[in-house]
Structure formats: structure tokens, C-alpha cells
Length: 353
Image 1 (tube, rainbow, N blue to C red):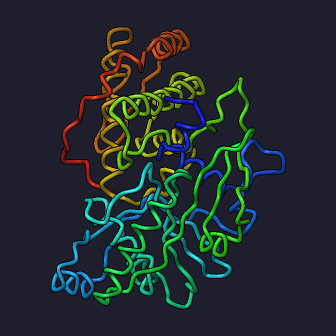
Image 2: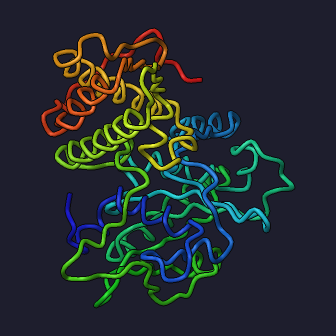
């Protein structure tokens, strides 16, 4: 995974995690400046599955406007005290009005429009203002602005009630990565119009912060980047298993629960991940990882780890000596060797909660 600042600002996974960090309650002097949190914004949902109202989908069909029936913004942040909600999407580059990405953008514009409260399934009285915000490299701002103006015009002409878009450009300063909002974003988030640094750049260290989300199946990344991000996810899962095993007091039947493992690996953000398809994908990856661990462990301590549907593994540790052998086997397990490109097929117990 790259550490070059000029490449990082074009990586949607960096964009997403940087945005999440800016909405965290961090102390003064932290490595990331929480620009959004200091202005009252917090994460409301991660990748929620939103549906365009049926009457608007029908109107779009009648007027030959191509939409996606449902859409998942990367994150939603809200300043609930003032009823401000922002649907946020991270993009590496601009796109044209005729591209497939434009279908997603049209749906997001409607979702962030006048009927946003209905789309979010919240009381109308709790929402006073909503926007669709794109996080993009600064040099893509002009192209995005042109495309969004065109798409907004199409939707308005078809009486499909688009919301106002805004742009947050990531730019490089001599010693920092900064965010430069357009006028709408500056007004909505209470940011300065000029580039505002939020993370420092040091020639000897990687400016990439610790990611809340090491892998997101919905982001547009190269195959090599996806493989690397999966490996990072697997390494975090392994760390959780090792830590839980080390804390166990033999003899014990240690229960490793799938969603808890994923939530630990993602520092609590998995619990806020609302896209059912993405959650199923992550659960299958966890099952793939744990199957590999179980197979490896079986060669060293037969019968120590077993799976119990729908999403639990039981680690049986009889005594201190056996615990030591299990820990030794786990710490020797290589996530690099795991075939991260393999897919686990959906199973009977793959449904959401």
C-alpha cells in the first residue's frame, strides 16, 4: 500500500479513513486534526443502504433518467444538534454524465435532496439541511463540479428533486495534507475556504493514519490494492484471536464470535456498517480466514478449534502447555500465504442479523 502523499489523496480507502478520523473526538495535538468533530459533526452511519422513493423511481423511468434503485454512500456524518446530514462519497477521479458512475451519483443526489429524511427513515423535524459531499483529489474539483452541475440539471428538469452537492478537495501542502472545500462545503461544515491541514507530512514517516476500515469491498481499488487491504484485515483478525487466546485461563472453551472479531479488527466501525451486501462479504472473508487458521492449527493441536454455525468458533484449551502450543501455532500463521483472492461461497447461515 502506497505511502506517497500524492498517491494517498487519490486512494478512496485513504479518503474514507481520513474523513472518519476528522469526525472523531481526538485530543489537541493528535496526529489528525478532527476538523469535522470540532465543528459538531460525528459519524452517523457507514455504508447505509438507501433507497430512492418509489414515486421518484417511477418518474425517472417515465422520463428516461437512469438511476440505481438503491445506493450506499461511503459514510454519513451529522451535526444532530442542528439537523445537518451529509452523505459522503469518496472518489479517486471525476467521471462523465454518461458513465455508469453517474447512475450512482444521480441516486445519491436524490437521496441527499428534499426527501432525505424519508430516505434516511428519520423524522422530518430532525433534519434541517442535507447535502451530498464528494471527497476527491484537489485537481479533480473542476471536473466534478461540471459533472455534478450537469446531473443536477437533468434531475431538476425531470422534477426529481436533487439535493445540493458539495466538494471537499484533498490537497498537498509542503508539510501537510489539507482539505479545501468549495463554497457549499465550507458553509455546510463550517470550514475555511482556504486549504486547511489535517495531517502532517514527514519525509521519514508514512502519513497514512491507522485505518478504521482496512478493507472495503465497495471501494474502487486496483486488484493489488484489494489484495493488500484484505491481508491487513486478516492480520488484524489474527491479532484478535491471539490476544483472546493469550487472555484465556486453562482449561477453557474460548468462544470466538464472528461479528465481534470483525468489530475488533475495525476498531468498532463494523458495528456501524449498514450495507447488508458488504456485511455478508466481510463475514465470508472472516469465515475464509478462520477456516485457514483452523486447518493450520489442526496440524499442531488436533481438535483445538471447531466451527459452530452460524458464526462462532470454539477454541478448546486444556492446560497451560496446550495453550502455549496453540499460541505458538497462531503466531506462526502467515496471512501473506493465505490465498486472499479466493472466495467463500454463500452458505445457509450467511444471512444478516
